Length: 87
View 1 (cartoon, one colour):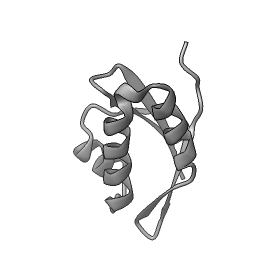
View 2 (view 1 turned 90 degrees about the vertical axis):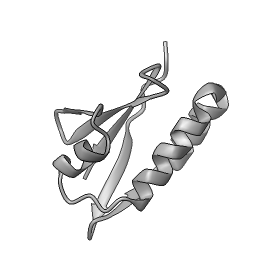
View 3 (view 1 turned 120 degrees about the horizontal axis):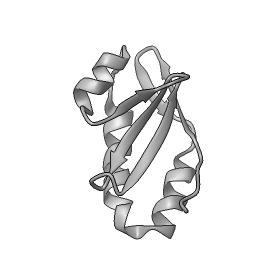
View 4 (view 1 turned 90 degrees about the horizontal axis):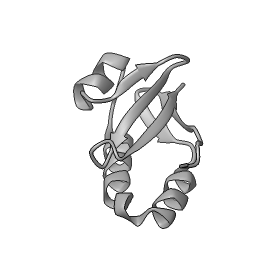
């Protein structure tokens, strides 16, 4: 069973700020086969200027929107799922 931790992202003035990169780092150290995909997601996320959920879906069409402003991103061909809360 994979650990469940929610990663928070703040959208402040349309700038993405990932609250806990350490969660990603800890995960890719334990599961190195997803390191490049998580680093890629992180790079894309911090460079993004999302203003709405639709913009996130446009950039990541396979992402799912779930309750409480959370998104599920498929990592490494859906081998892993990254759950992100958008504030």
